[in-house]
Image (cartoon, rainbow, N blue to C red):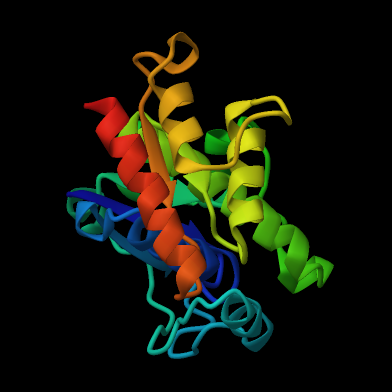
Length: 228
């Protein structure tokens, strides 16, 4: 099990968003037991408070709950308890370097390093009021983090509501031409052909239960069988 701690200043906006987005992503990918995910603050000013209401509302709109989460302070023992300590900005990293010392430097990272944007800051909605920008940064970082930890290409069906949307995601993420056939037989033929030989994939199911999620399960089964 890989233990991940997301860190920001107050632990009411960015780091809890990352915590619950990562938990949701891992669960939909069938990897909930592979990760232990939490979040913490570098500052004590919000201790005892829950997730900031606009962040909680944004998570809920995406079907992600965060009930029971309250701010907790980063502590020295976290360097022993977690495998990765991931900050939202350079200030968070500097704080962790001072708290943990140089010996733990290999555990410390910025979230957007995993989104191909090394050194960049996750937008802070406390100041910008742009919660969508923070969501976009956090989801990009968490998806990249999952790919880095699993060594696979992530296919995320999060918000798909039809079979057509499922195959649209496949075409985009797999760089397939528009003529690619939208059925399970065509999927098997492509996955077992030379373009994807030796590649590995992680399939994250749609958030909403129902026939589309059930069909996505079948897509995941085809990927798993093709990899064998």
